[in-house]
Length: 229
Image 1 (cartoon, rainbow, N blue to C red):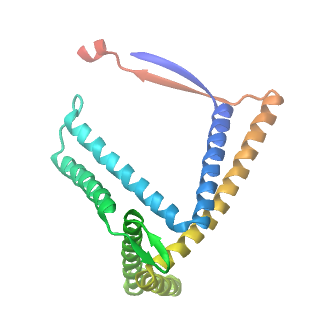
Image 2: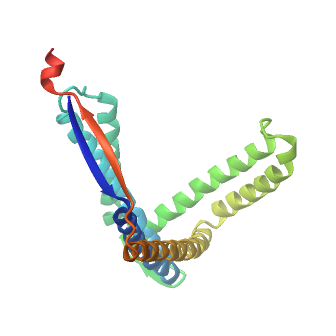
Image 3: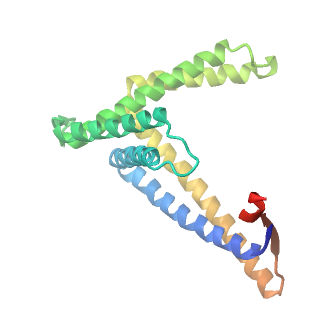
């Protein structure tokens, strides 16, 4: 049995996480600005980045199937789903390059831009249908207590209305959603920056006053010789 004793400086960890939070919040604010300036292009970029990350996840699944590691079994179902994800990304990417361009409301779109716009329309209609179904369930669910029925009815009306509008005006509602998302990003990011700055200020103040906050962790590992015995 091997025992390891590790000591962590909690103040340094808090400061490190606060700096990371500030950095992420600044990136989020930049994305929010882009969503306000160019909601269509920014959302298209975010969609393609997301699709790329999903495809990378598929590649990771294939890699894990080829090299499962010691004690791990190969999962055929996971391999098939990973291959389907990769195939979907490749098909979408190829279609985007060969998709015909178009002139919409006086704006000329390349094939890639036009195809990205179709993806945005599809996602808006898809989530609109989900919102519509969710609103219907809010009306018909028997599991909601009587005291929460009025709130459920209001939520149901809102979901059904938004769902119908997202299906009828997919691009317009998507742009409105981008603006609302930008406002939410601004508020949340500013709040996170303020909290992080207060945390950094508090740790610096405690450090100057000579206060140290640490934690000791004891880890016990069973040796190979003990396993043989």
